[in-house]
Length: 313
Image (cartoon, rainbow, N blue to C red; front, side, top):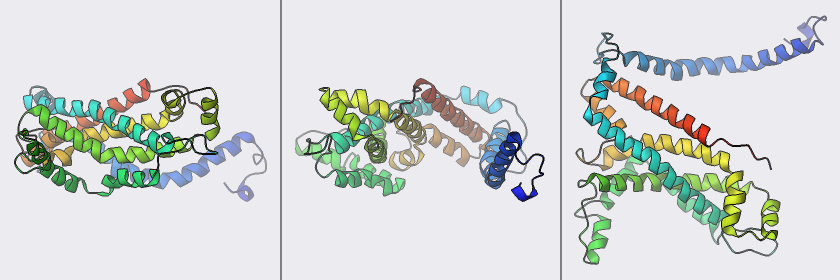
C-alpha cells in the first residue's frame, strides 16, 4: 500500500513494512504466474490425467488406471528404447562437458604466459569461440541430414576416407546397434560442445586473476591449477550444464528420427512419437510422463551428488 494510504498506527511497524514489501512483489508476479500455470503447469496435469486413460484422440477417454504403465512395463520395445536413452543420458553429458571444459580452459588459460598476465588463452581464442559455437546456430534437422551423409555406408565422407586407405568402413547407421549409438553420440556431442565452451569460458573469465597469480607463485602447474582452482570455482556452472545436457541427451528425438533408419536405433522420444502416429495417445502420454519423471530424478540426483559448499570470490 502506498505510504500516503497507510494508516498512521502501522506505518512504521516493521512487520507491516515486511508484509507490504512481499505484497508489492506478489503484485508483479501474479500475472506471469497465471500465464505459467495456464500454458505450462496445466498441460502437465492434463498429460498425467490422460496417461491413466485409453484416449485414442477422440472426445472420449475412459479411465483405465495403471493399464498404460503395465503395458509399458511388459513392452520390450519400450525397454530397448529406454536402454538407449539411458545410455545417452549417462555418456553424452560426460563426454560433452569434459570436452567443453578442456576447450574452454585452453581458450582461457591454456596459452603461453604473456608479459604482465598471470594467464592467457591460446592464440586466436576469440576465433575459436565462434567456430565452436557455430553448430548452435544450425537447425537440428540440418545437422542430422549432414551427419547422415557423413555416416552413409556407401557414399559417406567417413567411409570414403577409410576406403582411400584400403579400409572397408562399417555400416554406421544401419548395422550394429553399438555403431549406431556411437554415431548418435558423436552428433550430440558435436552439436552441444560449443555451447559449453562459451559457457565455461565465461565462468572461467570471471575468476579473478589474483587467484591464478597466487597459484603460480605456489608453483602450481596447469593441471593442478585446473583441478584445484578453476574446477571448484566454476562447479555451480558445471552442475547446471550437466543437468541441461542430460535433458538434451534424453530428448534426442530430432537427430535420431532424421538421421537413423527406422530399424537401426530407437530412443524413447521416437518410440513415443510412433505410438502417437498409431493413435495410442493414452499410451504415448504415459511414456511422456515417464520421461518427465526420469528428467526430474536425474536433475535431483545431479543436484544432490554435485552439491558442495559454495566458494565465494
